[in-house]
Length: 222
Ligand code: C5P
Image (cartoon, rainbow, N blue to C red):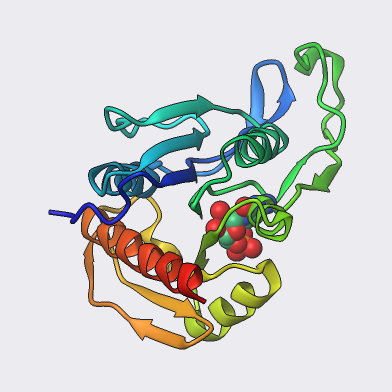
């Protein structure tokens, strides 16, 4: 049960992994399942919002009534997010995607054949843009929420991320939550850190929606 706290509001979410091409049939990606983003999209929809999910390829089911924009690499994801943000001026942006930190500098237009290669193959990687940071700094979304998957010092690293990225809320969780059904997290805002108990990704999604909607109301009344 989620109260209709987001009736008439727009929520933009990123989810899943990005896939950075090496050649037409291969690439670099990660194990993000897209479950947490799908759960958040559903919770936002149930709260009455109009929801757009920009997602890399995932096996998680996309909730009914959620508009899906499928993307591949981090650069496609960034373009789609900024285009949607400029178009819809979302009330809430939630960056759940596991964006690959690096992409291949010059992907090959043709399949790389091992017969044509020597014993080693060197790929040059370049840093991907930080989509959350750029979106937050663009000022196109009222409230920006990010995740921080950390293996240690969750609160301290989450605080740093909140500041650096210009987010209003960071959900810091243990990196081992990736692909799992449950999650134990901290809500980190400029007011401090709140430790949440272990809960399912569905429950956490509802808590995130409530917290983001509270931040939205605070900002509206500032
Ligand atoms: O810096 P780090 O990857 O730990 O930050 C995680 C948060 O930033 C997540 O909300 C993720 O969706 C977002 N992110 C992003 N673009 C990147 C890297 C991370 O939007 N290139």
